[in-house]
Image 1 (cartoon, rainbow, N blue to C red):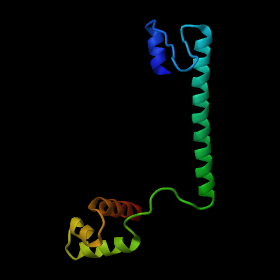
Image 2 (cartoon, rainbow, N blue to C red; image 1 turned 45 degrees about the vertical axis):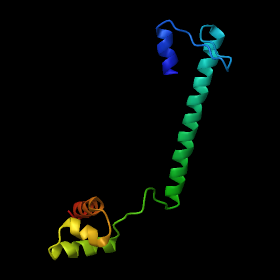
Image 3 (cartoon, rainbow, N blue to C red; image 1 turned 45 degrees about the horizontal axis):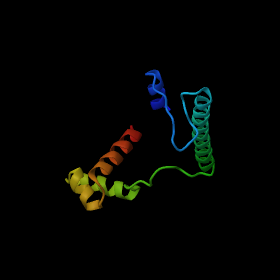
Image 4 (cartoon, helix red, strand yellow; image 1 turned 90 degrees about the horizontal axis):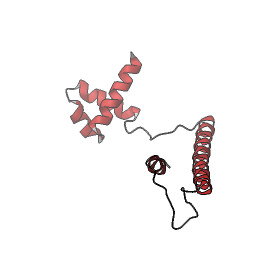
Length: 114
């Protein structure tokens, strides 16, 4: 729709070879805008259904997103490894998690402890 609008601003019309759309005529412009409005309506319906589904899932106690890679047990073991002199990269390697995931888990729990 934006492309057709930019073309019209330059005085260029659009004529579809496969559909009955010809923006050089009033009827063609009407059909084109109706199709655009229907597309926007469909996107809005999808957004509403998605939001309603997420709200219903939350009401049932479901939480969105991935399960945490660093479990509470792994986090505790990571803290022990670090207390015993390992750095975060070495602790992450031993626990078979990425160092980024371990850093994130350590930071989020230390922020929650504050």
